[in-house]
Image 1 (tube, rainbow, N blue to C red):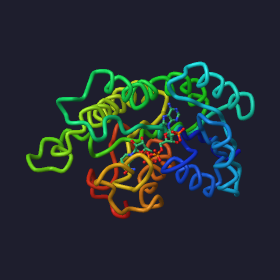
Image 2 (cartoon, protein in one colour; image 1 turned 30 degrees about the horizontal axis):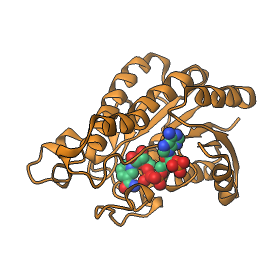
Image 3 (tube, helix red, strand yellow; image 1 turned 135 degrees about the vertical axis):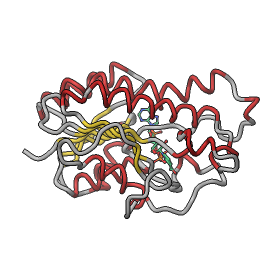
Length: 243
Ligand SMILES: NC(=O)c1ccc[n+]([C@@H]2O[C@H](COP(=O)([O-])OP(=O)(O)OC[C@H]3O[C@@H](n4cnc5c(N)ncnc54)[C@H](OP(=O)(O)O)[C@@H]3O)[C@@H](O)[C@H]2O)c1
């Protein structure tokens, strides 16, 4: 049977493009979306391959568990989990005005949502001969980039978003180690700067296309067994050609 993939937050933006590209590569793709109408429209938009809508809100554990039960019943295992769903956090707020509540709301999706997803999906990923988890991170979560005195990442002062993605990078490393013995590869990807709804209100949108942004996550989602785990890949993070 072809590989089975689940992409969260796939009704639009990068998640939608990643879902499309994985389906093009022959995978059965569960397109996760928290809104059924928009999710089904997104499946129809792809219009090719085996793409199935699954309702899934990463901050609602019951919806995550129901989605996993649905995938289990239909497919019996999961080969690829792409934790793509994310929120921008505090855009437009001065650093010293950012509240703990803004951080909490950002962490709910970008950090705790990923924990909920991984916890729920590991039993299905363990049934795969080549389990892969891809966490959608950002250069804004890179301590190396944030440590450069004049870096855009440092100047931007995205307290909630940057720290949530830094936490995600740590989760990636810790889960990679914990799942090494199961042969499950856990890596983080950055798409580079791609104009989407996430950054529509900022001057930092960049000019990469959705297809450009999908290169690193799709690369990590299609790794052969035992290739790499606990890495962070993508433009501005490592120098692999073609990102
Ligand atoms: N665009 C960039 O330049 C860039 C750069 C670095 C990293 N990233 C990362 O790439 C990922 C995708 O971002 P994007 O740019 O494609 O943004 P986007 O177009 O805003 O898409 C975000 C997706 O996440 C979903 N989502 C938000 N909260 C959710 C929840 N609680 N449960 C399930 N889904 C939820 C959204 O669903 P709704 O439509 O229902 O809100 C949407 O499908 C994010 O993790 C982001 O941090 C993006």
